[in-house]
Each structure stands twice: as C-alpha cells, then as structure tokens.
Amino acid sequence: MTSFRPAPAWLADAVFYQIYPQSFADSDGDGIGDLNGIAERLDHLAWLGVNTVWINPCFASPFHDAGYDVADYLTVAPRYGSADELAGLVEEAGRRGIRVLLDLVAGHTSDRHPWFLASADDPDDHRYIWAAEGRPEGFVPSPGTRSGSYLPNFFGFQPALNFGYARDDPAQPWRQPVDAEGPRTNRAALREIIDHWLRFGVAGFRVDMAASLVKDDPDKTETAAIWTELRHWLDGAHPQAVLLSEWGDPEVSVPAGFHTDFFLHFGGPADGLPLRSLWSNGEGTVDAAWDPLDCFFDADGKGSPRPFVEAYEKAATTLGSTGFVSLPTSNHDFSRLNCGPRTAEQLPAAFAFQLTWPTLPAIYYGDEIGMRYVPGLPDKEGSVLGPRYNRAGSRTPMQWDEGPNAGFSTASEDRFYLPVDPSPDRPTVAAQRADETSLLHLVRRLITLRRTVPELGPRTSVEVLHTGYPFVYLRGGRFLVIVNPRRTQARFAHPVVGHPVEASGVELAGGTISARGFGFGVFELDG
Image 1 (tube, one colour):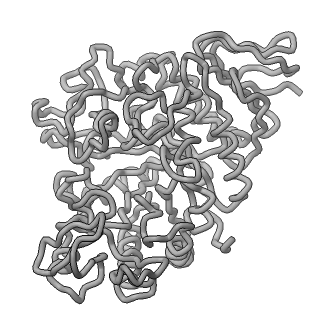
Image 2 (image 1 turned 90 degrees about the vertical axis):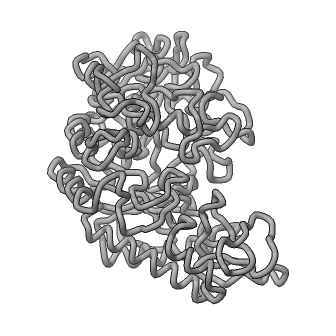
Image 3 (image 1 turned 135 degrees about the vertical axis):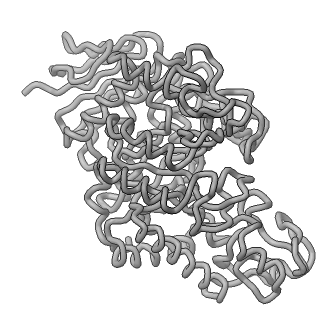
C-alpha cells in the first residue's frame, strides 16, 4: 500500500451533510436554491451537530445533468450566486465550525465547455477521446468541424476527458497511453482546479465517478495511479484537505489516495449490495439490473445485515488506519430512507445504526426530519435513468416550516426547480425542532453522542454479537447497540447488564435483550 500522509485529524470526527443546492434554500425568490440560502440556514446545521458540508456541483453548467455537466470549473453558476457569495458561505460556515466540500466532476465536462468546443474543431487536440473515422459503439458524432466522433462518460452531452487507456488495441487506434500529451494535460488541469478552490478556502472535494478516468482499466490500476500521484501532491501542498470518492469500493479507492469512500448503491465486487441490503426496498430509485432482495431495514423482517457487515469488515481490515468508509442515509442518486412502504416510525432505528457504526456518517439533506422520496415527478435535468429510476423524487425542496412553499422559497411554485412534497403531513424542521420527541431531536442527540463518546467513533472496535433481528453489536468494548428494524418484537439471549444512554423500546433483563418493533438502544455496560 502506498504511503500517504495520515488523514487530517478532523476527518475522524466528521459528520457529513450533503446539500443539493438547488433544493435547499432559495434566498432571492427565483424558485431555485442558492449559496446565500445555504448560508442563511447554517445555524440549523450547527445546531444539529453537522461539521462538514458537501455541496453538489455549483459550477457553471447548462444543467442537462443537474450540474454534473460542467462548462467552467472555476466559475460559480449564476443561478447559485457568485464566487464572493461562495466565499461568504465558506467563511460563515467556518465561524460555526463547519467545513465545506465541493463536488468535483473529474472524468468529463459538458459539451459546452470551451475545452470541448475547441477540441471539436481541432483534430490535433487530444483533451477528449476521439475516433477520427466512423462512429464506434458508444461514441457520439462530432458537433464541430472535426470529423469522427467522441466518447461520452455518462450522458451523450458529457464527453469523457482523455486520461488514456490502460491497454492498447490495434483495432482501436484512438486509444492513447496514459502518458500521452492529452492525458498529461488533463492531469495537470485537475490539479489546478483542486488547488484553486482549496486556496479559496474549501476543505476538500467529493469526486464524482472517480473510477472513470482511465478507460479499459479492469483492475483500475492506472486510474488508481492518477489519484495516487495527486494525493502525494495534495499531502504536500494542502495537508489539511481531503478527497472523498464516489467509487463504491473502499478497498481500491482508499489505497489509491482517497481519504474516504462511500458504500454506494453501485461499485465494488457486489455492485453496491452492501448498501442496498440495508436500505433498498424496491421502491424509488430501482435499477432493473439489480437482483431483487429483502433489505434489512424493512418492516417484514426478511433481510439481514450480514452482507453489509461482511463488506465492512473486509474493507476495514484492508484499510486499517489509512482511511475511512462513509455510510450515507441516501443521496441525490438514490432513494431517501423514507421511501415506499417504509414509514416515519421506522427511521429512528435506521439513524441509531447509521450514527453508531464505525463508518463516517453522511446525512442527505432532509433525511434528518424524515423527508420522503416523492414518486411520479417529471424528468428534471436528467433525473430519469430508467423506467423505475427517477432521481427527482430524492431532490425535492427542503421542508423548513409550515408556511407557504414549506419555507423554501417566496417564488410561486410553478417556478420551483421541483415541487414541494404535496403530502399534508410532510415533516418540517420547525415542527420537529419544537418537539423534543421528534426524529430531528433524536438525530441531534445521536450526533452529539457520537462526537463526545470516543468508543462510538470510527477508530474504535466493533464486535458483532448477532446479525439478525435484533442486530446487536458492541462498540469499544463498552457500548452495546441494539437495532430492530422489523415491526414485530425480537429477542436475543445475551447476559449483559447496562444502562440506557439513548433507547426506545429495548430492555436488558434476565439475560435477554428484548426489542419491540422498530426499537433501538444504545447502552453503556455496567462495570
């Protein structure tokens, strides 16, 4: 394993909070969230206990893919504000002890980016992957005077930046090696972009599609080499900065140079099974290629935490103290916890698990109040990926209060980026802030517990005692966690004695752990 500078000390205490900027808070009444809106709501995050915010792409873009089609990496998109307003947000967040991470789209740009427009007219430009003649499978016809076609990275309007190919193929003469001029130019540009924003004051980046750089790279060796090179530079130039990867395979990405990788709904040998085995209940965002499964956090109690536990243990053994795994509640591409048949009463147990397991927790905006995945929305900025895969349902406006438009915006709703959840009983921050029995208050208490009790952090041991219903594990040899996501009572025989630190519906008595339906508990052991 390549030797890197240890991760910044602050990362071990990170509680991530993901903000989809167009849906969080609208400060200027145009129906789209913005940077000033985020700044105005920082007190909510500080009260909650969040200390690290990740903002989805906020750079100039035609927004055919919600900003993941970047037209200028160094310019803030006008719909979100200006560079000065981003600087103000970073400064205000810092005053509250909150670091800000930006989203870096490393593997492709928009087809409106000046780099691509120039490349489409210059056959000697190799910033992108071009086939000089014809249209090989997966390629898109040239929009410029240059003949041939280009390779996209995801959607057709997202041309892949050329980081080279890991293997040569005489039948595909467009393949260039990783050390060719185009790939070298792109590696240098990647470093310049990162350096620019780190000097601006942000704390790091979440890197989109981080595994996508080098093509025909089956074991990701050459892609990893790019990130390794960049990490060594980062360790010297910006030692307090961090890189989080959208890779979904921590055993590969962290040794490559990332400080943290997420368990995702895709990635790794099992194509995202560890995360989906926890949360994915067959509703919301569903890929037709996924094998049907019964998830663990389901009222029927047919699932198991074993796929997740086994994947985590394998990753933790591989990584040791070199980096972290992060576990999200959901994200902009995946269903919210409150989705389909899962109801609000099931969410406390999910958070009790997510905030006490030795992964870095990532809370998707609104999950802390139990916002739901809203079905049946129209395609918005590329949200639809398949017949049952519409990401818009996880991207609706934040629900701040019971006032007009849930406090998100003063605009008329027909101007909104997406409609507010129309449910008459939709949860709000204001209502839950006023109710100490609410999910919001529970999440706050669990975050505080995690950040004040070293045994619940990511660097202390976890001993799994039961991978069934209830799920039982011991943290740091001192704190017992019990989680029962099913609707019926569950018991586990174990001679343990302790007192509750945070519990609902769980008892330790007579050598038996008893957990009512949807019960959970964190107990400090006696003696």
